[in-house]
Image 1 (cartoon, rainbow over the protein chains, first blue to last red):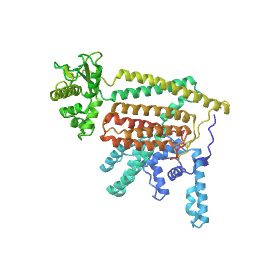
Image 2: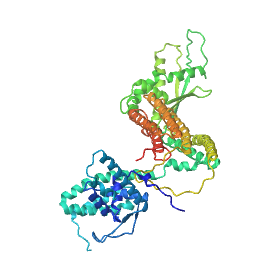
Image 3: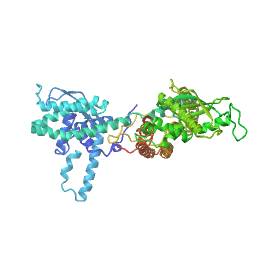
Image 4: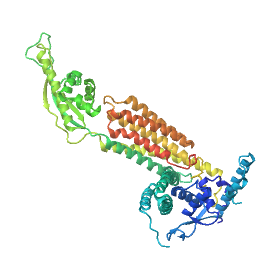
Length: 128
Length: 461
């Protein structure tokens, strides 16, 4: 039986934590600590996710089938302990893209109202 | 890569964090606990590297609120995932279920509820002992004929016995018993939180504990006293007997010749009873079974009827259901988005209304039966509160029936009233165990209605 096609729009809007975790996984699979670092980097340190928030978000994303777990393996940059890696699913890719477009459209409206001056500042958020 | 050596502060922090993970639900802890601890350790290392102790302090200040907030959220999420009590029961009442099955399920549930309640109430009721004294009462037949003419013949006189029964229960006689046994302070300690009772109150209480009966065709009066204390029951029966005899003796001394004051003679003194006479446990349990059968049959028949009606309606609107599709993914922002009213609401609503009415009534009857005669019994408070409690449950059942979340408001109001009742009756002559009964009913109602479920519209998280 073919899986049910889910419209990404049904899952929008995403909370900031969910959106940032998905964004962190756009470039490839990552483990929890790497996701947290990536989010802190994206937000210039304004959003530092605690372990509870991060894994609560991961749990909900797994349940929503927006991300999936890949093989466990050690991170050579940290230590030899095995870590759980996560990656975006096809649905997750579509959802994060849809949310980024939504953000971009909102930014466009704000720009039209002269609330935002430099368009390039938000370009990294949508990745397109 | 060689294993790195962490500072003691990092290790201690990690150990504390691992302990604090107990705040999360077990399933979440088992799935993500190790990963969370690993992430925390990595952040500890970063913090230690950046600012040593101050860095760790800042990390804890960030992590602790996060831990508190997310552990609460995970518990709420786990609760919502768990099948609610109502849903579990509700699966029994699906319209496609056979009416006989629905009837049996409801019958068994109601029967066990009623029998359990009656058994619990029976066992939390205070035990009461009885002691009996016998006294002989006869018309006085003097040797000297009075000026009044005819004298009544000696022997059994029903009018005399009836008169003397009233005399024994009069305040003149019972008022002598109170100081003799110091009942004002003894019962004050027991029923009024230590404050001494007034004599009138003690007399009323004493009268409620006495059972006076004539022995058929004999000039004997049976004086039976009840108490939770077997010795006290015997003391009361003997004290009442003595007080009555003293009263009559004094009258005889003071009366003129031929005044015809009855003669009294002690036949048998009261002894402490060996076994409690109240509550009658076998009788109460038997009554519970009978009421359980009646209520269970009524509720089962009603529910089966409603389920059949709903089943007919739903079958009339839809064709044979197709193959089940895989469920859509749950939105990551909300726990569950399904809303709506179900047939289960209606069945549970009706069921709940009936059971609440029955249970509230039973509770109230039990209270009045056991303590209705006690002084300072706050019936002015208890009866309206039970009424409100009963009404609240009926309304809650009604809203549940309609699929409205207002049922929760009813339960909230009830909770406030029940707590008020509990506080106000704190010093009242109601045993502590019995004061918990309405609270327990309220708690059961609240659990059943507030338990997270998908049938009643709820706000999304």
